[in-house]
Image 1 (cartoon, helix red, strand yellow):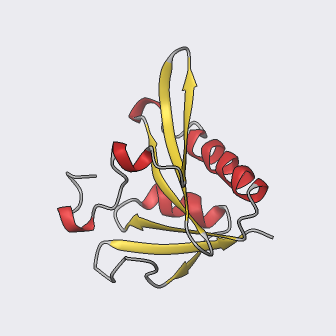
Image 2 (cartoon, rainbow, N blue to C red; image 1 turned 45 degrees about the horizontal axis):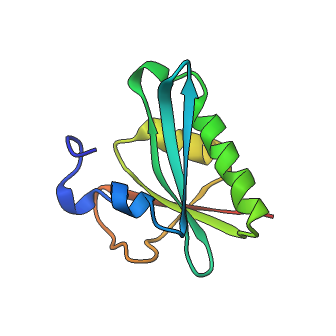
Length: 126
């Protein structure tokens, strides 16, 4: 992410932030290898999809889709009615995944500001 976007436009969670009580962090693994990660950050009236990363060797194999489906299941179980996320304009595979899974464009939310490198999406969980 740091090689793709300026520092002020990188919004991933630090290791410390991933350990906060309002964040659920999930890892997909096989044979002791981390294939990908995703986090759910609870906000007041929505939850945010954070820290979706898939190892280069695991890309194109459905890991991101599985992680996102798991995160949505957890969010529904917690009573979350709306998921939101920010991703980078250069992350076309991520944008395609989110769109295919029902996320739609929206404007900046929370502490985000509009910029030239961010795409903001949301999905109601009904």
